Length: 328
Image 1 (tube, helix red, strand yellow):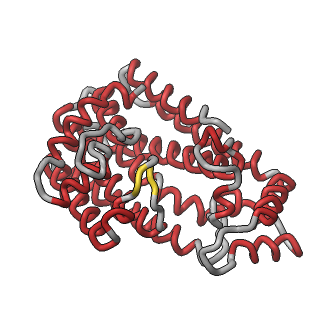
Image 2: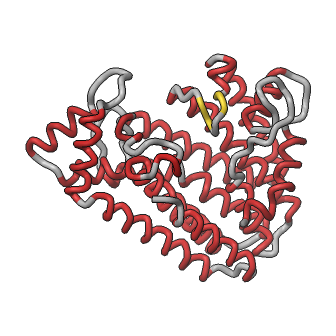
Image 3: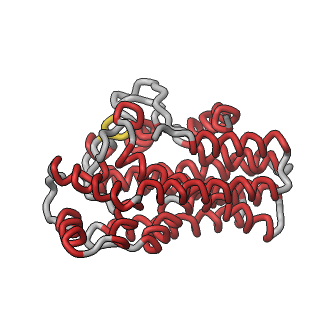
């Protein structure tokens, strides 16, 4: 697995980046997973997928691993900045089985922590080089725009095209950036950089749509959330956008009433069951799976076209196979 190959390199870099005795740096170490809430060492890290992609692509294209390491650290720190702020906006109190930063330290201090994480990230981006820093800033811009779109969607119905535009920003921006940063470390031309960005975008779409399917039809004890959980939260995911495009009459009215209801209370069980029945009746699950397959197949074709070392190319294919094989 790509993440396993580069795990220790990435973790060593994160420990260096977040070293220090200040309260905020201790909070950042907790969020990353290298310490518990009391400051004791722990290993509760995430998947480290994005920085591993940077390093893999750089190595696979014959790039400078030292430069790629700085860029990889910058990207992982940007990703974690976004998670701290996302948890605040979504009022999520738990991430990866642990209390979120804002749930422990309050919203104001969590905002400070996220801001510091982004500052440290960009310092590493600058160390990697001007082109890397520019690519990171452009990705952050797109990611934040995507988060804003996602919040706007909570107040209205969403088309499939609008949904995909949001995914390309919120999810796809950092994945595309990961592949681009690896290419920049290898000094490839603009045509290859464009292919790399498209590869990340295809993986981002495939991953997010599949995640949306799992959020409705996934097996609870496997995916970590009960069946229909995204419906209970009124999340405007791909299945809901696809359903809105097809339904009419009483079905459209009831679906709109469920998803446009005000207040923090979740959707009642009987309405969750009705939405799932409607989605099944409309064939939305199969439609979503076709989209997942199309995007992942596009990613595999691009891998075959890139001048990657064969072992790295195979690792990327294995990554996609793993993403596609998540329990359904």
